[in-house]
Length: 411
Ligand SMILES: Cc1cc2nc3c(=O)[nH]c(=O)nc-3n(C[C@H](O)[C@H](O)[C@H](O)COP(=O)(O)OP(=O)(O)OC[C@H]3O[C@@H](n4cnc5c(N)ncnc54)[C@H](O)[C@@H]3O)c2cc1C
Image 1 (cartoon, rainbow, N blue to C red):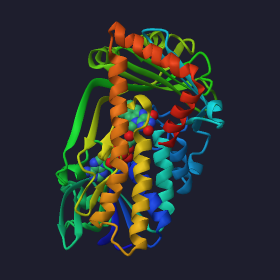
Image 2 (tube, rainbow, N blue to C red):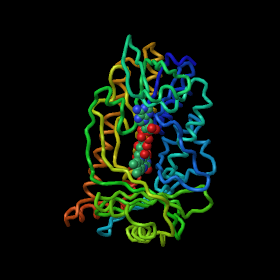
Image 3 (cartoon, protein in one colour):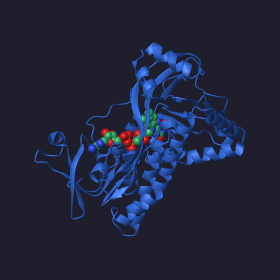
């Protein structure tokens, strides 16, 4: 493959960038695609323990991963289907139960560890002849000349990346796709501003082993200090492990981080009302400060943003990566349309169409998440009554439930 000049270069090898590279390569064998990832090495999937970072993948995300051949690569049954979702308010009696039977489907989605998805996609890319996966390439500088982007990694990496010589060989591409996450360098280099909402919350994630089996149910309790989710895991021989995502106000999060494992497990069990019996053990904890960001534009000259580089949201509805995978599908459709009409994929009209199809949808989800977050964080009687009544009304209305499930599954 000619490294000097690619048709498309994707910066960022997270789930979204990898899926984008795979989908373009599978649908357009004539295109030369490069995937540039900053990390030199990617941690393998641990065989005997769960990765605490997980995603809840919808049916349409599954279809995309199926199309590129990654879903079948997960192995070991590590995609855990969930058939029920239970949501309840810590400050009242309101609760709602969604079941896949409500929509006559076998499940509502799957919980999968991030590292399982990333490894499967990387394996697929390695097998595709028209994709080059370049590890250890942290995009630092660039310039555009005669319609070509010239991409250069951080200078101390140049001589350690296989094939990039000390003289600073650079990658050239007509279309650049920024999939480099919430603090996107591509977005900065394009001088695109992002609107930011700071939630003053931190998400603590870990894996908990519970006394009772999870019952293939995704559980979420809304506390005044933030939502607490227990998400079912599978693949290591039992049904007692859950991925925990505890989004908590900063002060509480700081206290929780300081606790030893036993004290943390006790706090976790209490906050979860012992719904799965005792929390018998917890893994190492990781924390993520939470903020929403939305890029004011999704494209610049010959460059476009997807995934968290374009939008990042509160994890309370577990939609972040699903939205990113929708971007992948729509951008691929627009590129296919352009190629059919003899247009360059980097043509501004192509990128504008992608933005038109995705930005409104993403903005609506961002707004909904912020509203949920405020509604469930409000402590006064009026709001408490409103949300508890709302939850109970939804629970009592099969039609409303069906609509909500189908809407969430379409993402
Ligand atoms: C606690 C928590 C729980 C979540 N739970 C869910 C869930 O249940 N469901 C869901 O859908 N989403 C969930 N999300 C959101 C989801 O994890 C993100 O939306 C998703 O990981 C974004 O993927 P991405 O590929 O766009 O970005 P990232 O995963 O951030 O990947 C970006 C990649 O770009 C690379 N990179 C960065 N800068 C450069 C550079 N200059 N040059 C080259 N490479 C670079 C990075 O190394 C990284 O590999 C959760 C998020 C959090 C924090």
